[in-house]
Length: 136
Length: 122
Image (cartoon, rainbow over all chains, first blue to last red; front, side, top):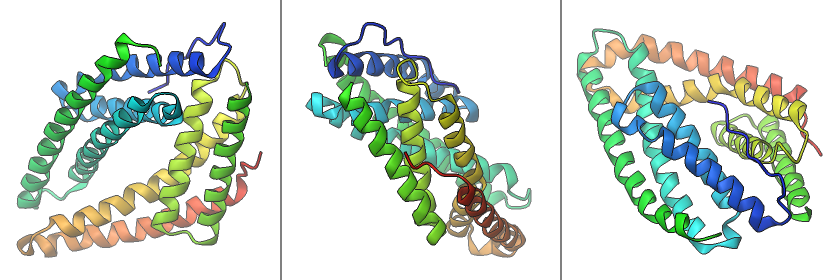
């Protein structure tokens, strides 16, 4: 999924740049977070990429606001869990039909990873609400 | 903006160093490093696309990342399959595992070949 363009017109300093970039990447991730309800492979993949972009932005600007580092850490956990689910999706797609026990195991692990990703995302959302109410 | 210039140069240099390390020793850890450095740098270029004209560079980074996709995917699948299969289905998994290991080897060799041709030095 293509990254949204960040409008940086009129930005004159690092704080302004951070503010605009983080807002856009945050909006992207929030929009795609519905993947955690849909649970299909493509939506989850797009959401994982959006989390990655947001995390990189937060890590880059973490020197400006200590809370960014904490959120980035939680996002890494979301990504990790979604990555586990994605790996299982890819393996399930090529698994021989006769391997039903392995298939069941991978399916169960996939669902558990998505559940854990959702829990981490909820923690992120709580932390990010504070970001909505103040400037970086 | 001084910060931006410095950050762009640093991340580009990190990607180039990761690329060279992978060329010298094309193993899973170095593959991971070059992919991560590439993703980080690309995301920075996307974030500041309005300020920094980098369409060709972005395309080069994207192409290099795509060249490593197959190597990373097959490496992950091999590790996952190895730990997921119980004794009862081990024999069924063997042909798939062998195929994936051969693919991993070929894909890593192809990724190295592609990355030898691509430079990111600022």
